[in-house]
Length: 248
Image (tube, rainbow, N blue to C red):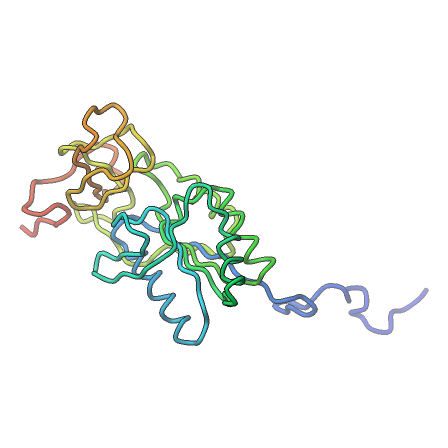
């Protein structure tokens, strides 16, 4: 019978708990998600600001910002210019372009990440794993039908860290709101294009016409509801401003 000189020899190839011994540093892929109005874009801008203050250089990306411009815009008035990600954009090429200009990239911030394709999310994961870049994605999990966006679904599958944004958004009834209802002329819309860019206030459809409606410039907005009122389509009492709670 042969005794091991060290009782840990049999497990010598396995790092101790919590140790990254012998493994190269890798980037992280993080997804921060929540309903409209919860502060995702504000958090994205804050993350970029905090990293930049420490001397890190980032690449800020967006897909279909509510403003229609290539920027991250927050409802509290903050904004920052960003690179628009197109339908066929390879996000790895955007990093390579920075390298070609002699610029290092330490992190990537992506707002409205729910509109990315699953393939583009795979590319972000590759940047985290192979290039050791930290990737921070911000977006809505589900569409106006309460179904996961393809980009968000892939992020749930691949992200190292999933973080719901902690700022609570309330339905008109006072309960926590989770569902982003699409509203057309005072009625909740259940069918139509998945991607229709609008805001929580009265807006004009910017990306395409709603399926089933003839008017291309139909007025559309979004309203965050609890599950019960999302299911019933109850938008609450009429107020002077959409989205406000009645106090009496």
